[in-house]
Image (cartoon, rainbow, N blue to C red; front, side):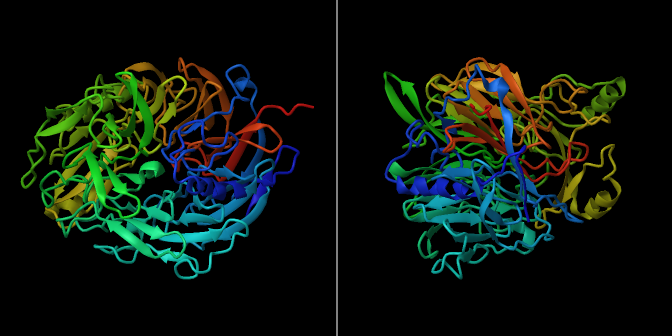
Length: 638
């Protein structure tokens, strides 16, 4: 199943550490690990600590020596897979490292324990995921641990599985032979197999394992319901369920597909929710759709809602809270205020009091464009943070193109479309939505450096054309109009509404976006004021051809060595930036592009390692599909 490579050395410890990361999280469940209090050597939770700061106190790799990083070893999972129909696998894992072992999962349901010094497998568990069910987002971002004895994985085919961390065997006594079928017990059950998935690791607080779900967006009003559920970590029995769409019995989704953060000291989990179904027409779900597109604080023991904050009212743009919430402290009036940061695909980033959900820097409700589609009732206002200002462009700006042909194409296409600024609703004639559905803050999320009081937040700058199609015309248009220059139209029925939907990223004939570059940036934001200190382009959309700045589907981490590490861009590389200035310090070559968030740890040999999963982006012309786990380190002292 797997192949190990090591630049001349053997690779042995990578997989076991991934499972132990969540173990440490639960063992210390009475205390929220502020940055710096998690064991220095380890990476025990997806975001390094339960609150997702992604900060490591390791300093062996620093600004003075990062340019000399080398590949220490490479492990291949064997799980890169392109079905005949549907999306390819997306290897998005962030491994965990605890107790001398790495733990991770693959999209095909293999859970691995690896030697961290060599990458050699210690054990492997096969969940036997069916490969050809047409998954909408064929990904797995990692695993969780409980009391250094159990690894929890939520598989793409919607099973919660408990695995013995020492042996890699299913845990007897948990659910049915070690697993719980997450398709059971939903308010609205899935019609199609691929309508309901799991792509992110569970959260674990005390003895409760909490899971959200990934739900196909635009098939119908009654897509599967997006309940968040808490299970007993010992038995697998359901303890509680929380439904984001109460009072709307025929509306689904509003689900939490991103990573759930937690504050064990307050016994809270913070749930990032997406849009209700379907995304682009809300005439069957009038009103704000209160808990969708929100961050919701739930009691981890009971599932009771404590507070919520909605980032988008009555979403018509697929503006999910796609990135994990991040917990940190803000210095206000001579005291530290515990807060939570939450970003949206809209490009807005909100800083909220962690106890009450109230904005810390202020939020304004501003008038926005209104829908002209019969049956639709868009929200008259939307919330905007006073600080920080929008971190991604919210208007098309100047039409851009690399050539005269590109500029003419983009100007003609954009000129046909409605755009009155951010939150321009979808229309029958077509609307230009900026940011588009992968713009703003994507699922990569933010990192926090407590010593520099810095938030590091990646954003994407790319617009999308969205058109509603009357039901009587939908089938014909779907068959005849998916023929733009790149063949990138996506059609969805939106059953249960009067309209189907068509959307595409607006891309020129040369394959570059029609908005001006950079198309992806990294922002350094003052955590105490919300002011942007620096902004730099990330990666390259087409190296050597396009200007700097690529959209990124992966997030940053930051270390006490003064470095921000980030991959996720379309070029096959991982980057290091100076946390104080944003200056690029290093570019590490990868076998293919990475759409994952890196991690770092110190091995028993005393060396600090940097690790990234490189699986490719599954985008035509943007590198090959991959299954690589790559570890970098400084040259070993002799």
